Image 1 (cartoon, rainbow, N blue to C red):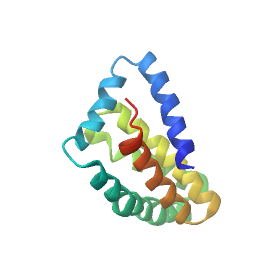
Image 2: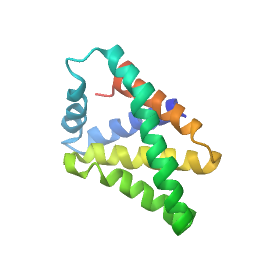
Image 3: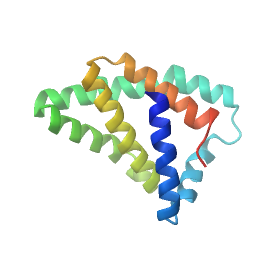
Image 4: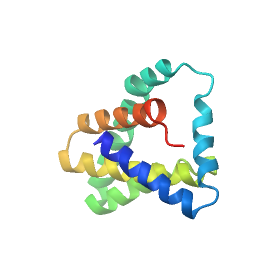
Length: 137
């Protein structure tokens, strides 16, 4: 599923770059965060800490509670919106859209499997692919 999400992002980037004049600059801005840091360290942090922590919090805690309180559909929509919404402060429309797409993808995966491990593995794999192995620029 991490590879599938990467493919979705690659296609989305190709389309967005043709339609939105600011898309490439905003995507490049996302990657500037990693400049000057060893790619192995970035990969290790993404796999061991960042991907798993995001899934445990967002799908394991937030989404689970929202679905329990508001039902599956409303909980899913709210969880995805909040996940994307925390990125608004970046003022980077491409990052916000990426969070919405990723949040929806992992939300569906969590709801379909009712387990966190597939989400953790998918998120960690996607992180390493998109940030270390094959960045989309």
